[in-house]
Image (cartoon, rainbow, N blue to C red; front, side):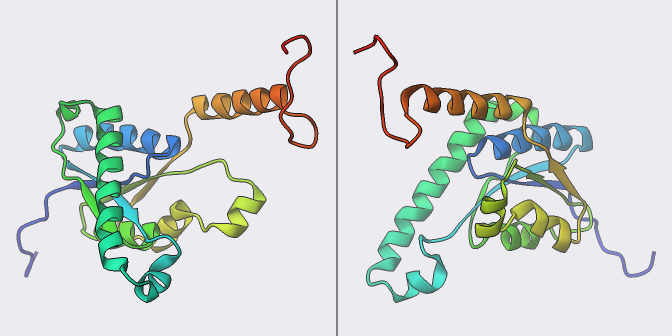
Length: 184
């Protein structure tokens, strides 16, 4: 092996947004990092509301960007605490907040030979897919490292069904709030 320098430490990079799917991916990434003896790199990628172009044109956007980054950091720490707890489940963690579109940001971070990129996949309808590009699809198509796409937790489907049932119980067919009979 001529010309090979020291190998990069193994890393498991995981996209975290705070969604149920990303929390499931975070738990799976922690388990993967433990199995591999790797560092866990949870990454929360964020963009200013309206995107970068809109942000550059807005007056005072630099001050707002600092606040948005702070809020992103808080959201990442909450997700880590919710999933890993205070001890981090016995895996070394290096949390990152990255400014940018999630897919390209994650692919850019998980670029080393020993990296594994973990992303959550979600149940997405046609409208959602048409309006918002899929981070997991982007990562699978563009990453140079292996990508582990984690399906949503079965609990997520149950939660969505419960939300639909409760929405239907308190709203009429037109979406207007209504009381169930006899509860006025």
